[in-house]
Length: 441
Image (cartoon, rainbow, N blue to C red; front, side, top):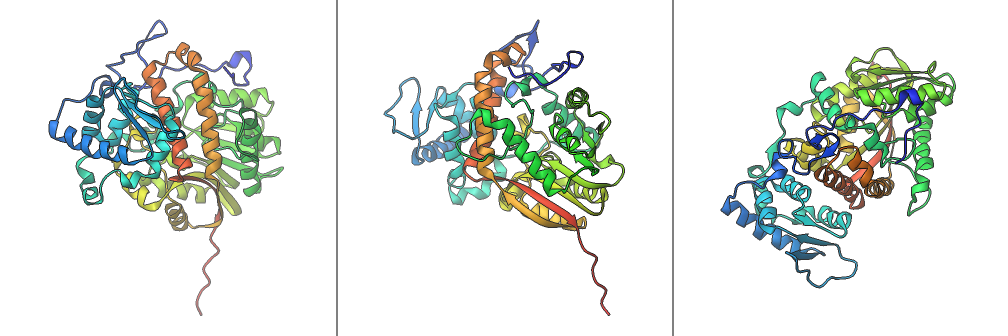
């Protein structure tokens, strides 16, 4: 496993997994995990009518897509180049979808009720044809089978701390098992495709350097970073001579970021604060925030952009890196409890470009530049997924059971498919203060 660059006195601590991770006894994972994941451990009680409707609609949709569909232990003829889906327990598969839609689809994978020899390829086909999965006349019935987001996931100050803890405080060692040595957990920028594993550290530095350039960070710049990660951007900015204040709500990330900054001899240039972005203090020459807005939640986007504007000195710049989706898709997702919000990023929502522009403008910021690079995120996620798959024994030794590993594999493949299908994009956006409105004579 790739270890973070720490001194012996600052070895990353493995925290207990969140409620979606393994039950453990003396470090040995239990595979059932019923108490922690009851919705995965057993299929829902049968509702024959809903199960029959799901079997008819989903079964028909799968057969119409460029997929090979297999049911039970016998595999049918395979078409070269086409991904497959094998239903080991069709009844449980359709019962879950009949009750919980796409949440049930993901939980069925976690439970081992279906598999694919090309999971990312399968999910890419589904993402590309997402509007074809339910017949048009029935799409208006969507509210009958989707769940509303639970109120406990709201990103109040307390809720935001808990939501961040549930993902980013899983274990520093878990993230180190599939990230590259820079510990960068956001899209890299490559110079050639297909990207190789050995290209990833340089590609992550290229992404960081581009953001710092966009924000005009140089020697003497006072920089605010919202969303520390494990400290690589702060290290890179400090090496340029900037003075960096970086904010995070993750205790695990803050501890390791401080250790890495100490090891680099840059503690006099970087201040890591365990602080909510809404409580940021001071004004800065530049603000950088990398894939942080997705965790804020639509309810709090006005507060987020107000914090960006409030932290900026006259003439300063904000450089954002954000995942985006189409505006209509964002509106549909905003009030919906999804598999990602249930198991991976509680309280999160990916914005649209329109939402970013409108909320930035309302806060007094204008868009200076906006560049997308979705194919680079697909490559980044592929490399993470391959590293995670190769590190299964390490992940098991950390106490994460089979169901958690299938959860994480599905999450990485699901995300990669979103970028491969262009359902998702990732963009680097520069914002600056709006010029004062000229007074009319």
